[in-house]
Every structure is written in structure tokens, then in C-alpha cells.
Image (cartoon, rainbow over all chains, first blue to last red; front, side, top):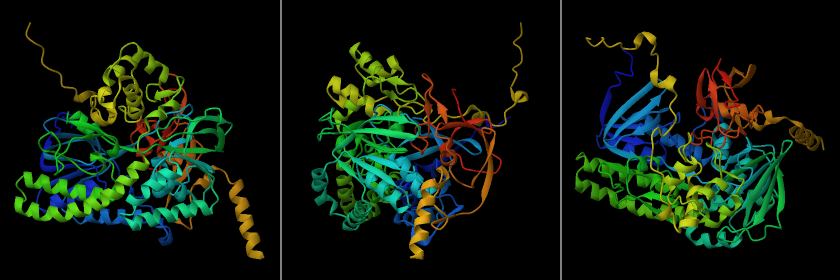
Length: 484
Length: 114
């Protein structure tokens, strides 16, 4: 019989989902205390997206190795020298309420029954749609960072970098450093937004200094920076993207739609901030709250990072966006809480160890929070989603159809999904949830009233070929005929 | 004088280079080993280990599939396995091209939903 029927489930103390900074820290601390730990990630090595590793076959020259590259190497070394089981290239497609984690990897399906589960699946990028956002060549800011730091590839011959937050500056600087051309930077934040963030950013002077040196590179390259502007439209003419921009106010409302400027490039890298990934916690029916200063919907957690579901802990940006530095402490605390609850670690030891972690967490979180303010959601930015704009890319659902459904009485997100198919495609609503929630919230009054989509499996599409493996016609069990 | 003019020539060459020059040059990063893939019937050489979506991108294949309902062209968008916009057929299996890495002999077909 083939593996589909003999898919045995291995029992372990702790399963950690996501091998970014939080996941690695959590898995490592739990494993050191003696727990049996499995860490699972879709990527081929640890580091998450922030410390995403280049392929083994790529070797950057020493002078071209970034701080992120070095930090990533450190984390990958930690995993290599530990006792824990690391499963890379494994996509988690389901997590059941009794904490069975189902994955599909290079060798087919495997399942793990976790006594405790730490969810460290990080963040997703929010991109508020505008006409033209589905044109090939329009990509996310996060995608651009992957191109630059793990592939050493430029996003375009001449790239327009747009959106907000630290990624905006990181991408623009990355392109310049790699020898590429940035044709313009379109920043949602105005000068005064940056000045307001400054005092909080001082909590990590080293990082502030780094950011300022990136900014200096951008200025030195003479790149035109449009502060307090948003992209309102993109059209493709031959191989050039003609990108319309307009000034906005701090809520994201377009101030002067007649006074649009046009910038050009062959690539538009755009991102409107990060929001915590809640797909697994929604699937597990954990309690969530909406907190704009944490980036959006977040699972409700206690001081030790326990979710509302017994045995389930959340770590890193999935608990609220605060960046890679604080993710390490969040991971360590969640990891220690998990092993303490499993009685692998004593409560006394836990209390003693947690104190120092909390102090570092606070400092790093302050820095992260300033960054979150720079990428906070601007509710009125949904003005750029015109009625002819596709909101849900998977199912090609237009804004006009969303509005129509709301007009006809759709009052929560699941109703809207059932009526229009928005969020029903293979991305499970990860790409459009922020925009659709915001549209609905603008009509029903709040994000809480608009609600969240019910989590559904498969979290990632699973090719049927990978499920059945080498299963052939001969393997089909033929039951004996019932006596007549 | 001489140095300046060489720099100018390089700058000029950079300008007229095609999409291929999107790969950052060898003096910043060394790519060990190249593999040959078949993409929509054409043989293409690409660095081993590169993300397939990126290989397609630098070779000018911006459109990877067509959308399900109105059949408009789509290319990679998130590059981290979330958006599913870069689905292509790799050795007969539909996979997001951002989760596949360049290997010798891989056969890739783009244009799902066309």
C-alpha cells in the first residue's frame, strides 16, 4: 500500500511553524531545555524573509555581504548545531484542532502530532489595489527585497519604489547598492511623519544610523522623492509603466485628483506596510483583536505568548509587527513558556530567565513600533480602488462587485466572500484581505464589525500529484462484493 | 583620462544591455554552476539554485499565467509562496515558480489559463 494510507503521524513535544528569527529562537531554546522539537518552513533554509538565504551555489563577495546576510548565517548555524529536527521545503497545508500539523514536502506528505505548537509565521505585505496593480512588472516591496538580497537581481532597469515604511528605503538603497537605477520614490509618509517617528527610532541608535545612511545614499544618487504621495494608477505603454501619483493627507485621502503627476519605469515595487499573518490562528479559531498599532488583526495572547487555544503559542511578527530584533525575544519567551507548560522547564527557572528577555524585548519593541507607525494602515487609501479595479486577484473580483454586494446587504466578510467569491481563490485571501476588510469596514463602521474570514484548509494549494505520490491504478483497493 | 573613458564605455554598455543585466554582476556575487532548462520549448541557461520565477523574469518572461476569470496576464507578485500568481507547470506539476529552484533538465511551461 502506498503512503497515502500509511501516512503515520509522529508525536513530538513541540512543533514550531516558521523558521524566521522568532521560530528559530523558540525552537532552539525549547530544544536546549530538552524538549523534542520539530521546526517546519516552506523555504530551503532558516532566516525567514528578513534573513532570507541566497542559494548555496551563490557566494556574495565579502564587501557585498549585508548585516542581514551575516545575521541569517548566524541563525542557520544555530539550527545546524542543535538537536532539533528541521524540515525545510515543507508547506504546511493544515493544522487541526488536536494540533496535527500536515505538510507536503519533497518526499510527499507527512504529519506531526504536537503536544504544543508555536506559530511563528510572521507577516504578510499589505498592498492596497489601484488600477493597474495586476500588470506583470508591478511587484511587492517585500518581493523586491528577496530579489535583491537572496537572488542578487534588480527588480527593473529603472524602478519606481512606492509605498511606505522601512522597506521603501531598504529597497531603494538596495537597488542603488546593487548598481541599479531608481527612477522615483513615492512615499505615503510626509516629512512630518518621519520627524514624528524620530524620537522612538532613537531607542536603537545603531539601526537609526543605518537607516540614515541608506537615506543619504538615496539623496546622493539624486533620486526624486515624492513625500506624502500615493500611486493612483498604472498603465503599460510598450514596456514602460506610466505611473500616476497624487498628494494624500495623513488618512490616505487623495487631496487633489486633478493635480496628478506621472513617473515612469519598467518596474513598480510597491507595498503599504506589513500585517500579521493570522491564517493558522484563524483556522484554529483562536480569539483575535484588531489593533492598528500592531499592524492589524492579531491573535489575543497573554504575557507569555499563549494564545486563547491551550497548547498554542504565537511568536514574532505574528503577534503584532515589531520587527526582527524583537522577534528573537518573542520567540525565546514563547519557547520557554511552552516547555514550562510541558513541565520540561521548572517555573522558577522560567521566572529567572524571562526577566532579562523582557528588558531587551521592550527596547527592541520600541524601535519596531516606530517603524509600524510609518507603515500604519491609512483607511482612506481605499479611494485608489476605483470601481473598475480588481480587488481579489485570484478570482478577478472588481471593486464594483464588492460595493454591489455590500449595497445588497452583505454585512460581514464571510458573507461578502460567499456572494462575490472574493478571497476564495488559491491565495486564501492573503493578498486582498486588507483591502476588502477596509472597504467593508468603511461601510459597516469598523474592522471589528467587518470581521475576519474563517480560516480554511488547504493553507497552501497541494498538487494532487504530490498527495498521491507514486500511487497507481494497481494500488486502488477493491473491496469484495457484498453478498447478494 | 583613460580611466574615465573606460568608465563611460561601461556605463554606456550598461545602458544598452538587455534584461539579462538585471542579474547583479559577478564581481559582487559568484554564481557557481549553470544549468540548462527548457522553458516553453526554448533552452535557457540559468544559475543553479536561482528561483525559477526570477529566471523567467530576467529572461523577459513577465507574464507567467493568465487570471482565472477575465484571462488577463499575471506575473510573480509576492515571491514568497503566498499570492499564487506565479503558477507554472514544472515537469508536469503546477507549482508556484517562486518555490522552485533551477536544476539541470527541468521542463517549464508557462501560460496557465490562456
